[in-house]
Each structure stands twice: as C-alpha cells, then as structure tokens.
Image 1 (tube, protein in one colour):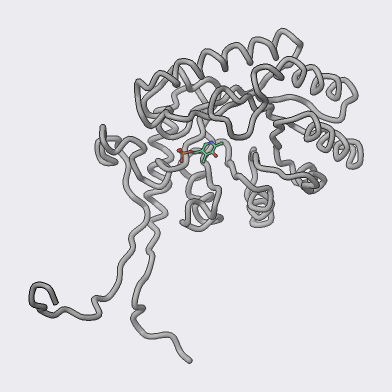
Image 2: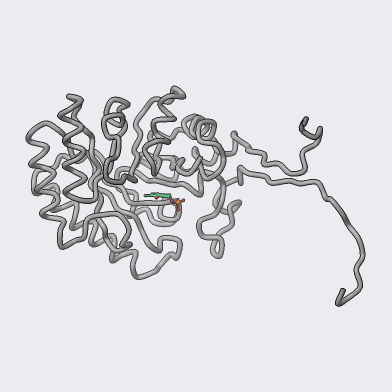
Length: 267
Ligand SMILES: *Cc1c(COP(=O)(O)O)cnc(C)c1O
C-alpha cells in the first residue's frame, strides 16, 4: 500500500520556534543556566531534532526523565551536559557514566547502585541529590535528608561519585502566589544549607520548571529546567498567553476535513 499523497492528518514541528523559545528562556533565566527538558520524545516534538534546536537556542543542559532518551541523544551526537532523573532498581548506570550523563538519586539504595557503577567503570558519577520539598514524588524527605547527604558524601570520599547538584521540583509553580511555593523554597534552602555544611561542593542548585522560570526569579538558583515553554506553550494560561510571554507554539496539528453536512436538531 502506498501512502496517500496528502495525509489525512499531520503534525508539523517548527524547529526554529523551539530554538527561539529556548533563547527567550535563556534570557529570562539571566545568569542561571538553562536545561531544556526534552523528556517524553521532547513532549512529542521529536527527541533529537528538538534537542538540537534547543541547543541552537542556547540551552547549556538537556534533561530527560528516562536514561534511554539521554543515551539516544548521545548516540545522535549531542554533546554538552545532560541529566536523566528517573531510575528504577537495576538501572544501567554503567552506560550513563560511560556516556557522561549526570544521574539523580532519591534514596540510599540508589546511591549505592550509582557508586557500584562508578567503581565498575572507574568513572566518578556526577549525582544530583533530589530533595522532596513537598511534591511527594521522587526525592528524599526532609526527615531523611541529613542521613541521605551523609551517605552520599561517604561514597564521595571513596571516589565512586560526586554530588554536583541538589534539586527539587514544584507542585504548584503554575499557580503564582500559591502558599506551597514559598514553603518549598524555604525547605529547599534548608536542604542546600545542610548539604553544603556537610561538605558538598555543589555546581548546580536547581528547582524551576517553566512556570517558575517565567514568574519566580527567586527560584532560578544556578539553573532552570523549562519543558512546556520550550515548545511554546504558556505554563500559566489563565494569567499570560504564550504570545504575552514571548513564546511561539512549535506544534501544529492539521487534518483534512472529511465531511461537512447539515443535520436537523435532535438527529
Ligand atoms: C517535566 C519536568 C520539568 C519541566 O516541567 P514543565 O512544567 O514542562 O516546564 C522540570 N523538571 C522535572 C523534574 C520534570 O519532570
């Protein structure tokens, strides 16, 4: 069977829009670095082309949830810093390390698995320790944070890993003024202070998704992690449109109209 000359429906991706949106976010981030989040096939826009466009727009980092996507970016020839943050027991950390991909840790067992890969490969793992400051998803709970930091730094002294980042994720950054935002910032500041006091030499503290990148400079720290806005959508549509924010939607879904007809009421 041959494909129809004109497809019934198609998605068109505007890669220059991804580049320009990224440049807009890089400017908004100010001195903080920008990690373009390209997880989930770049939100359906195509992992590799979208990542290249984000790099062209000035993104210093690329972020994925699953490791496989970061590895795919390396295989496609993308350089620079990358972080993959979603891991399950038995994750292939050896490949992460040989491909120079930063990894995240949420628990002592995960730190142990990462350190084991560091010993096996002879490559010091670059770890971003995640603090659960209220979202309740991945991340070390405040009550376990001190112990988690100490565990990580013990492994660091063996040379198996290095804690390069402390980070967290917001629950309601898309509702500017929501009381959880300042509460999470406060808990995050405490987590960073504990890590630094314990001796962690952090390169990057990061918390901001698209909404916080655009509305909350206090949350920029050393790096921001926008996803949605990279693709030109407003993370706060009730407050500001994409155009208001200087963003351009990168995806266009079009289809041929199959049939138009009149139908009586109650048909
Ligand atoms: C998806 C995700 C982001 C990006 O969030 P947006 O709301 O799309 O900007 C940032 N950080 C983490 C950890 C994520 O999972």
